[in-house]
Length: 334
Image (cartoon, rainbow, N blue to C red):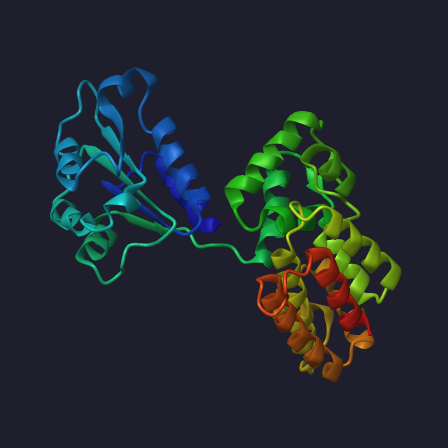
């Protein structure tokens, strides 16, 4: 992210703001920026007296302001980092008074994770005037594979598109979780390696052959034998392959196919942009659209909604997940 790079560059160049409000649903960048400030603003010998980390659940706004108003000892700056500041959501607006006239020798960092401060509040408006507000937004599913590729590229690694898709489908869009797994791979694999689905299977435990990505691909290609083989595997391993996840993925897939049918410009670039998919997978969607006409796709979406309710116990009479999955697949491929 360009905004993150600029922030880091400014901090490196000692172009420091008196207050940093780091907020948003995606905690990864909030942690990365606050850790960078913690590691780089002060010299090691200055940190003992001039750097403190507070936690929202343990302090009040008055405690934070009191610490922020202190003068540094034998240093030009002091750093006060407030982690888990979302625990102060009911009183955070009290910080507006301090933000109107912040201590110039203090760098105050507010880590407000998993949500954002109301932009209509005085505290947000005041900090934005005198300091830095960074909002870390949640990534869309289609954005994460490219983030994985770029992250690995900076470390001297490559990754196969299917391998990155496996990570997204298994770990979701939580960048922190994904980064942890990537760091494990970097410990195991030598620099310069292209990470493959086999590496993911062997080192992270995600099957390269039996996963939702392969199921979607098999259904889209109308490869019935492979699709039923995967469904049987899911039914035998329900804890690792919850039906609710599979149903959600199939719903998204056929919703994308319905959108594709309505497009006039079906060039690879337009399809990738409209469906928010990696260009590498566009041909799979185009092929699936040829095999599933629009009328059929509409019916399948209605069927998936029905089975979504059944998977949650509505009108299913405790039917085992494996049987529900098989019946859903029969209805889709029929």
